[in-house]
Image 1 (tube, helix red, strand yellow):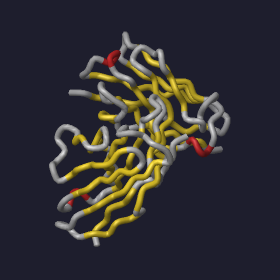
Image 2 (image 1 turned 180 degrees about the vertical axis):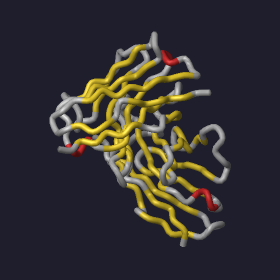
Image 3 (image 1 turned 90 degrees about the horizontal axis):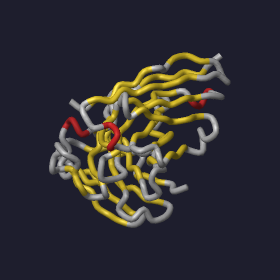
Image 4 (image 1 turned 45 degrees about the vertical axis):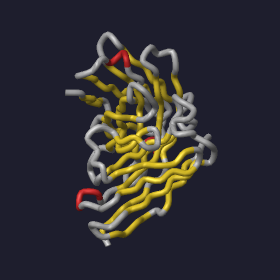
Length: 108
Length: 119
């Protein structure tokens, strides 16, 4: 089973700062990697699919990069509504899927 | 509007059974692979099971294999999850989730139905 590790567990930043979140896979997932945002009490929302493609309606400040085993989600300038938990998810061996444990981005 | 609405959650004793349902609307249901994803209180997301549009491909997480059964009714735009042998660790919010048509990410999520396994 492919295991995803996310770092850091918590990222404390101020609005306007740049956020860099990491996701590492235990074996290659090529670019079958997605990122989701979940705010408290809300449903997860797809941000990035296939490692680097923004989902419809997602602001340009969100970007994804990486391939193989190392991936990054970057938020170029944090808005107040971006403070949330972010999960990565792999689907290299569809239909099976794995989620990472999440990174919480909170206000410094 | 694309929508997924789950139902069937509730309180059940350990070892008991429960059947979750998901009603889909606003899209061509049979063309999409579907999933169940769960989230224990205060915890992260856990993939539970997936089924392809034609039901050819079905898969389960190791934690539920042999106890849960996923199925779908394309004529009635519905997805189901039959759960048996329930354990306390199966408690959580169960989401019905749609795969993107072109790939493995999940683009539409229902609001979830809560399952509580407790004596």
